[in-house]
Image (cartoon, rainbow, N blue to C red; front, side, top):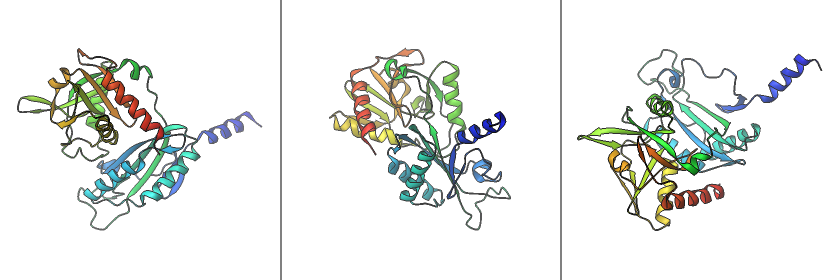
Length: 298
């Protein structure tokens, strides 16, 4: 075989599949119209779901959250939970993903006139999924902990929904990255205090005097991993308090850890210039309990 032809064959074999509006298509193809409201208005929702060895972890939790937000924004998901999971499983199989992430996105569809008002007539939504290899994270992060940097929460008042309007999250995380950190601890000013909210893509817990504290769901995302961890803390017979938590309370904590779909449960070794015990006994217990749940779940 001619070398040029061979290279073309190898390139074709390396192409990844995506699921787009009911069809399996080549991921690198041109599918979304430029006038899609997801592009022009960030008028959409998304979920990131962890996959391992073909299993999709906590899929129903993620999809139920998307259904609730779609109803809130008057969007329509074109497929049922069962259908979506079947399509996702096939997508993972086609891409031969062993350890990865399933990305799901829904937008209000295409608006050729880029009207701010919602279309007067119901237009088809745009729904697609990507099955991707797991992003690389240094395994030492779970052993030695990570550093956070505080950063103002610049987001809108719809943070309980996982919208695709993520620029403030991107700015927060990149501030942390540029300073050698792993994540941002975002905060809002309230009555002269800095009230912690969440990270660019994480929720936070602290431990003090044997009690776990985490910011309450008040214009922050009800993270799926956050909910699982709260259940685990209760099963271990520890007290967990959901309330407004200030940055100062985090800085005065004995242990701090973050949780997310990709990071799972990860200890925090420092916030700005304040250091914490890593890995503390309470954090270690939660990490182990979550790993047990993680690898046994379907």
